Image (cartoon, rainbow, N blue to C red; front, top):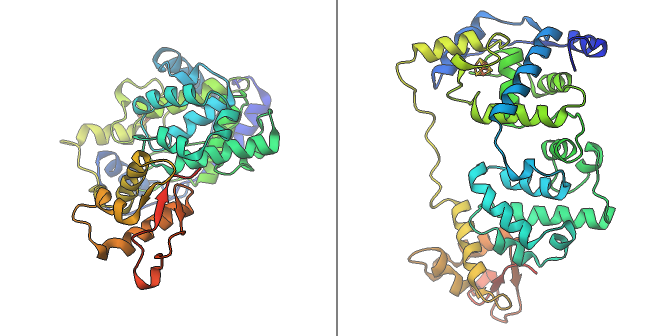
Length: 365
Ligand code: SF4
């Protein structure tokens, strides 16, 4: 889309986003500036001028051409590979994903190979990447595609959204990155960048709703360049316009960015970055114990698995019989999520009287 595109202009002129004032304690410099700005600017409509859109498109596409990383999933348009990368990149950083992505595709090079594999093998290969549910969900998606569509991978956002485990972001990403459709979608990086450039600072409270940001995202995708544009804006959010330290001083869209004055002055005034909210302790959490159970099952004999009595000491130090109900509950949760199979073939098994130590658990087939 360019400034000379009349349809783009008319769509662009129609955008109005209401800003809302906010309150609350700022947790860093960017938030502090946003707070004062938000108080100064209550309920004023924001126009997305076509000139602004065109300049941002041109500059961000050029920035991406120079600074975009050469990542394996950017060298392919294979929808299966894009799907694998998008699932792995959820909550995991790019550098960490790359070796897993390559090993996974070596073992499961096609959608069919993944769909037909034993689930236990998929979970084993996921070891170390974390959030094991993603492995099971990814295979569910692959199986659903093979069952419902055979060899033909669904192409449209609407079709993709029908698949289990595929939300609006993943559907948009596949339609765009595999099939090069000019579709809007956003993750946290895209959302933050769009908000800052076209609306203003997003802290302490967003000044636009997700629906409004989606409308903006739809209007700023340049026709015929959706792949490059969405890659560019995601990369820009990941590397340049980051949440806590946006590089405003050397920003290629500084003149077009509505958040620039407020964020720059906050960055300059801040004596040093304030610490964010304290992160929740991971070790000892339910998620941590679930990961330890899966790790123990990965190493257990595939057919027989482990009894709860055998599993307990591998999961929790100082495990005793009184911990069995706790362990059984965790295992039941894993079974519900498709990450474990529990055999109730032991005559001793009876949760109500506490004789659950002989219950066998293994990775699913
Ligand atoms: S000027 Fe700052 S806030 Fe605006 S897009 Fe650039 S880096 Fe982001």
